[in-house]
Every structure is written in structure tokens, then in C-alpha cells.
Image (cartoon, rainbow, N blue to C red; front, top):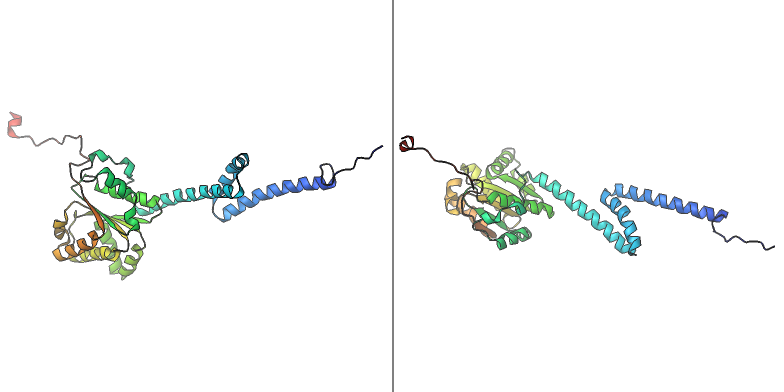
Length: 282
């Protein structure tokens, strides 16, 4: 009678059972290791991607490198998304307004091509500025916020405030001896937005502080400025034609300046009425 010889390592043998058990332990240990290292790297999207992409990788015969790249792409995309949201919150916008929500048919003084060019954010890379001039309601603040939000999503740190709020911030730093430190801190932001220049006139000290803010960023980092006054009337806001001229010179040397025109976007379609005359009561 022939004796069946077990193949070493086959199931049913001691070696085979040990091999199966080891394989199971290895699989469980691999999952545990993946979870541990993902937590250690603070990469939850990587863990989720690894689990979801593993079956697809097997079916489509991905190489190890292709699988790794796919997992890392998911983690990077998740970080960019979350990072963009965090940067938007940190910028302290008064409202969330995107370029996609802008009614471009109402814009006067800015073409679709110019808007698309601004949306590439090349001005931030070039450390240049953008200035929107025009009467209230013509879309200046919406444009500024929309560009700034896109900058946040692209990985840039942004700070937003009105001109008056920037002056208050700098004045507080100046009075505590921290002005230069504050300007240096702001210089690390690739983009700041200064909204509503011209709505409130500045005293001499405030004008000087604002000048230092613009001067400190000259050819170093970008500024988006909105104003309801043309440059020729900035002397009224800053109380000094010389200071205003020096500021404008630095602001527009490397800048795109767009003068917006038209009626208020906010008041479109509304009838404001008129004051009745005596004849109206007859």
C-alpha cells in the first residue's frame, strides 16, 4: 500500500497550518500597522484610501508604485481641502463670496478675460497688487473676497480687514511698541485685503500707519485694495496729498487697477421711490 507523503507546508500539516496562521496574523498585523502609522502621520484620508483602493489595485493590476501614488494623492487632496477651509476661517472674511457666484453680467469695467486672468492668482506669485475702484455696490468687495478665497484654496495665507480695521490693528501695535513686529508678521502673509479705503477719513497718525502697511509690502507681498474714491481724491482720505501720492506710487507700481462703473448691484430691481411733492397731494 502506497504511503501518501504530505507536501511540506501544505494545509493539514503542522508546517502548513503554521503558514496559514502566520499569513492571517500578518494580514491582521498589516492592517493594524497601517492604522497605527496613519494615525501617527495624522493622515486619516490615507488610511481610508488604502482600504478603498486596494481592491481596485488588485483588479486592475496596479504596480506597487501606482497604488502608493493613488493613496498619497487622496491624502494630499484631503489636506488641501481641509487646509483651504482653515485658511478661509483664519482670514476672517465678513461673508463668503466666491468668484463663481459673481454676476459678471452686472460688472462694468472688468471683462470676463480680465476676471479669468485675476483668477489664476498670478499676481500673488509675482508679488503684485490688485486695486478695485468704483462707487458702492459695483462688486469691489465681492471680487476681493472671491479672489482671496481662491488664494486660500490654493494654499496661500490671507488676512482681510477694512482700512479702518487695519489702522486700528496697527495703532494698537504701535502704542504697545510692537508695530515693527506686527508689520513683519503681516509680511509673512502672501496676500492681505484692504477693503473700503476712502469711506472714513484718517488723521495724520492713522495715515502714517496705513502708509507703513503698504510700504512694508512693496515688492514683497500682495495687496488687494478696494476704494469708492479715485486716486485723485485719496488726499481727502489721508489728509495729506504728499502721503497719498507716495502710497499710491508704491501701490500701483506693480498692480492691476480696475475702475468699476454702474449702478449698485445690491439695489438692482428695487424701486427706491421719491419724496412726494405738494402736487402729489392734490
